[in-house]
Image (tube, rainbow, N blue to C red; front, side, top):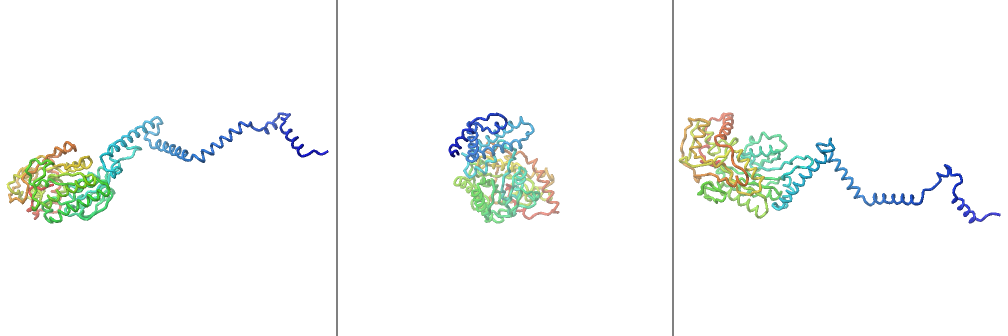
Length: 462
């Protein structure tokens, strides 16, 4: 008799559930794992699928952390020693924390648009062995006497420098030694016309500074002081650059206060032959302060007193260059008036040092930058005689209009706030200038009298 399907299934089920009789190898291979083991395996698989599928951010962060750790170990100067790596990383973190603290403290003293640009000046160790990043600096009038010496210092410091100069009084020869330097650029441009550049700092020196040059075209002189300064202030505002204006001791005019401190307002003839320069610089100071107060622009104002040194124009009508050129050419030293007018003479390297300290400091100014050592014109002539030609004779001529009788800076503020004072005396600096003039005069075969020497302003030398 045949069995029904249900009976066969039941028989099969009962036979499969009975344990094997032999207990040999074949029986062990066919045995299934316990139920608890299968459950835990499935749970682990589900967890891995969840983490891999839903926690991608976690894995990304872990990967970046591992990559950063490897990079730090590779960059460490002492990576060959596993024990020194943690100390290097800790010191870098301390330097970075100091820089961040300095930045946060400085945030309360600077406009917001300047934060990112100037944060790289802050002290503290630069992490990961990075070097200080040089600034991008514009120097208007950078091919001139003072400007070219400033360019030398900035490039030597590691900055990139753009010189903007129309070469009216500046000379390409003053900066020719930087040709081929990728950090140097010369743009022939008049600041009376706008210009757009991406920079961190602007040293605004552009303006003829000697009577011969600024009287040559007085309208152009005052336009340079007013319109040119407006253009450069506008550029500084647009790109968030710090702006330094080189003003002049001529803002004090023929002073009634001696020595002249920054708080003195001056005694200037507004309609005189020198007013294109004197009043032009006074207006430039006004513009700078209005941009500072009204637009939050970081400005610095330097009032420069008589300066001398190599690269001065040989026949620019200023007293030191006139005396030196005349003595070298065996001409009489022309003294205007009675020769009792006083001036203070600073060597150009001292001035450049003062300008850079002012730019990098936190004080607006104005600051007098000059040498308080005071000389009469006759005393200066005697120093030139002793340096070049003891037999050089002195010739007196009528004085020029509006020539100041006394000029001596009070540099107390610069000493106290900038830590600056001149170091080079006239007796040490003058021979350096004489050698430069001798090389230029005689290399060109120039033994003749220049017509501009007869137009000297008795002491205008800044």
